Length: 98
Image (cartoon, rainbow, N blue to C red):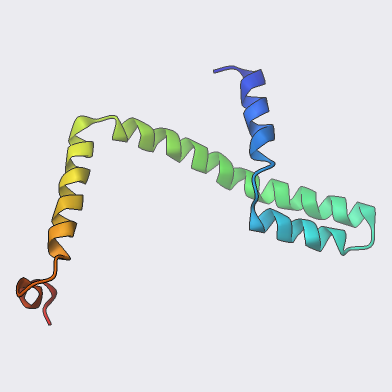
């Protein structure tokens, strides 16, 4: 809702464990040169920024979509259908084709 709050949450997000970040940090630390290490991490940050931005925008759109009652009902019906589909019994031959 505000820039300071967004910066705080972004900084907290940076402390979450991520294998890709840790492997890049290990790679950067093994360079033996502070400038090369910094450039490697800068390249990593610049390379992941567009994907993170797109993910945030997509999450916003999906959230708006999930607020629609019809989408939630359709999702619930699909979960029930898939549950019935996987129940064991004589219908398995007919449903699964084997």
